[in-house]
Amino acid sequence: MVDLLRASREPAGRGPSEDGFNLIELLIVIIIMGILAAVVVLALGAVTGQSAVAACDSDARSVEIAVQAYYTESGSWPSATSQLTGGSYAALRSWPNNPSYYVVSLGTGGVVNVTPASGTPGAGLGAQNYETYVGSGGANICSFV
Image (tube, rainbow, N blue to C red; front, top):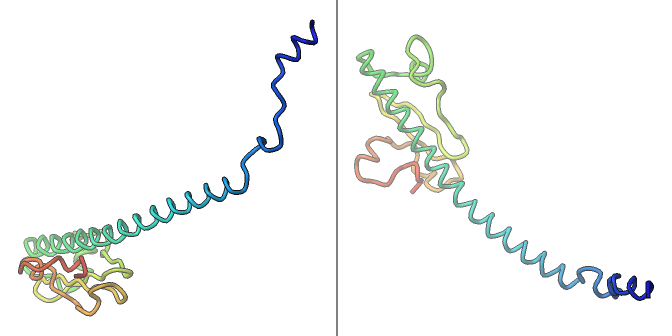
């Protein structure tokens, strides 16, 4: 009787086909994970481009505000970037640049220029006056349109 009770408590033996996943099941799971990873990578690529556009816009506006503040403070337009980043009047901690996507430069008369980097869309535009370009109703130069 004890042997009969002991036998009923033990689980039934599992055959070799029930020990784990077979090769087909593993391959299907790996393929599905690969497809999901590809979707995520493609979605993140678009976000990276949008963040570069937002950074360019923010940097150009920061320089534009610093130039206007310098003019208000001193009565003349800055002629060099060092006038905005150093000395007694430091409106910017450092000069904003992202050579992979754009270069912000200072023109004469308080003009802020943005030049798309080579290899990016709009690279053939050369330096564009940020304020005039945006004010004329054109698309934001930082979007490299």
